[in-house]
Image (cartoon, rainbow, N blue to C red):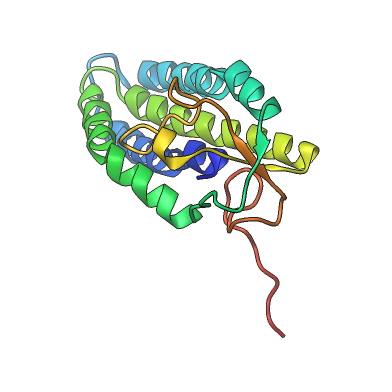
Length: 186
């Protein structure tokens, strides 16, 4: 499983859940008022994006430096399968986070939604950072699926002992975990 794909898998659900919850928060006046809620939400967005983006970078870097070349018996999982496994494994956490963000709108409107959106942005920024590292080193980073957590996450967790590396043409995901763009047939 690609490391950047696992990191990026949660970015879109967190972002959209946060944007929707923040949009609902604009309709509810809340206890603190919309203006304070939006300002607090903007601060939470920036802090969450920074914390999520920069957390565990040393571990990712250390595992990336020690990456061994993937052998012919290593199984390389498709991007769609990895994203589906992550989202299925985290669906209840995503639903709970979204419900909490909606509930926060009655106290501090917009803030909970922008916090969720900030976490999604931080994951996207971390995946982009991993993509830049992969392009610079001209190698894609893979993690064994059995070393991931039961819910398909934690690509830099304690169970992960080392990464595998392949050339940038391997797999169906571009560096950074995005879908690989193919040339249009003419």
